[in-house]
Length: 274
Image 1 (cartoon, rainbow, N blue to C red):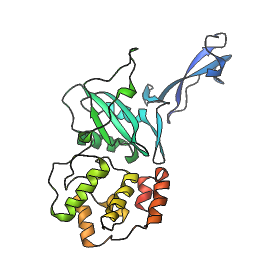
Image 2 (tube, rainbow, N blue to C red):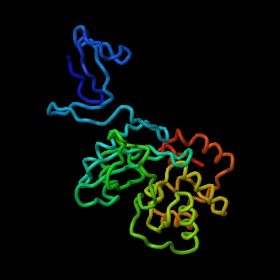
Image 3 (cartoon, rainbow, N blue to C red):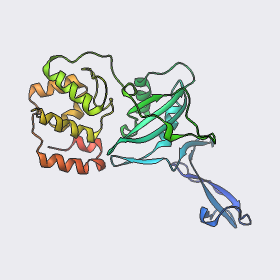
Image 4 (cartoon, one colour):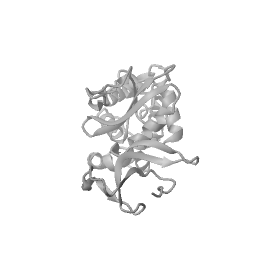
């Protein structure tokens, strides 16, 4: 049997002699590498390392699509397990609110508990931004089914503390206070400080458009791009005060954006002129 090419994330395949009939033919793949043999997909993803060993990357049935990107959850889990202090790790694509799917990481610790900002920072160094989880839920242990397998349905929805928050400093002035209230409503978090980042609190493209609409209803005009470029609430408020991005978002464009946003990446939306 010949090995797969180095690189990429091929599926592991188990070779069996053609004389074995204990697996259904529909579950097999013809093998051109072994005479009179079949290859059976295991559902595991792996890749060859330089030292000849195989690195396990997760399952091929853990793929999700979020905002136009196809994401292999096993790749995120593999990187999360490399973070100091993490014992077990599972990543889900949750849709607790219809149309608002986001990545949520669940983990246990085997040493001192790492802060969320450290976990996120380490993942940002290894993964593209769209694969970095929005929320991080620390568990005492992973929930299991009676058969001893992971019970994904029992994993809890993330609460406000599951999102990264900087040292809290209360909003200052009427504009910051109003924006903080709107962020709390849209992001469903208990409080927002002036140093908090919209996207690190769980925001994404769809919620960004929702926020712009809520602001418009309050008489606040804004360009959706400013939310992506502002580092925190304080900077976003400063943009509005400076008047650099006071561009009204027409109702018809908002409706179109809501229809198309699921297939639009954050990077594409930054370039969108409204």
